[in-house]
Image (cartoon, rainbow, N blue to C red; front, side, top):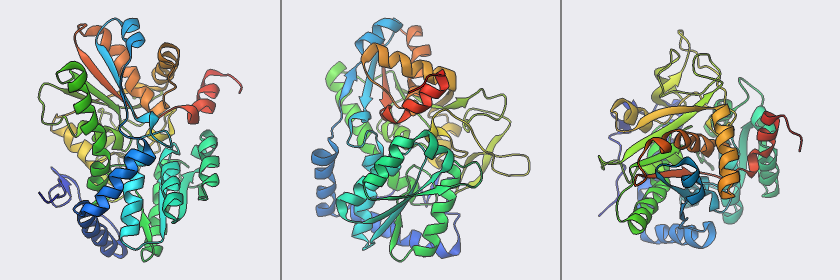
Amino acid sequence: MKKQIRSSQGYFGRFGGQFAPEVLMPALKEVEEAFLSFINDRKAMQEYDELLRKYVGRETPLYYASRLTDKLGGARIYLKREDLNHTGAHKINNALGQALLARYMGKTRIIAETGAGQHGVATATAAALLGLECEIYMGTIDMARQRPNVFRMNMLGTRVVPVDSGGKTLKDAVNEAYRDWSKTVRNTHYVLGSALGPHPFPSIVREFQSVIGKEARKQILQAEKRLPDEVIACVGGGSNAIGIFSSFLDDDSVKLVGVEAGGMGIKGKKHATRLTPTSYSRPGILHGSFSFVLQDKNGQILDTHSVSAGLDYSGVGPEHSWLCESKKVNYTFATDKEAVQAFTMLCECEGIIPALESSHAVAYCIKQAPQLPRDAIMIINLSGRGDKDIYSVADYLGKTI
């Protein structure tokens, strides 16, 4: 059967769309047509699937966290180990797919934005593999707290472009990447890193990340002979979450939980919760699509805060906005303090150093698992590893490396 984009004319319910400058509309149409051709091209998809297996290292394990389960004394906890992918996160699934798509379109250069640096590293890796020129836009605050990933990108032959405007984080890096693409569309493809932006990007990222959910569903049925009770993932832009949720959306028995960055608490402005109700979150347009956005009463986009650079973003993917409004997915938050505590607990209980982003999902599990019966099953999408975060955690804890 021929694969199609699952959104309706670029919309998920009322969310989504294609709000972009006129200069980018032909490029977006080109990307959509090429993407549909690519995912229905058997040879192209065979190359992608083979690289996922032999280069990325898929499939990733679904690991039963027995010591964490015993410590919490409730539900059985499984970790979908996306941290074991080449480059250390789920980001390579999409970056590699879009880099192949760029080559398929005849582009010689790719650009991307990055917050935590994992998408930047994944894009730089794919560019090196395929011989493409690559530049990555990154806020200067994120560059300081993700120094190891900046160095990794440079080692891979990619130029990291510092962004010193606005809040100097992910939102501002996206702005600069769009400016670049507007000027260079003839030879450049923008490898958007999360399930957001103008159509067709949310659907492209969903397609390339859906491998997570397909594997997790098959693996839990093999391990437990039934579906899980809950599937949990952190939500920044939303790519790792939409990837694992995609295979469980039609299962009413499975509770899906997206965990946002509560920062220093959601009563003030030092957080990044778009789908957890706050006085500052309401539907609006940001970076090419209509979704929930943190904004003031005049519609000005607010800066955000999170100890995790990858969740430090003012908007969220349009499919997540629709899933929230339609109540198909439950959205909550974890604070910086809770995330760092979860980071530490997983290190000590399982010998796994999680990304601070993923630690938000672990934090929810720490609170929820003890309230569930011992035969309940939870899957946490462990979207990345935390070696990139050691400086941030050390700073938070007042320690010196």
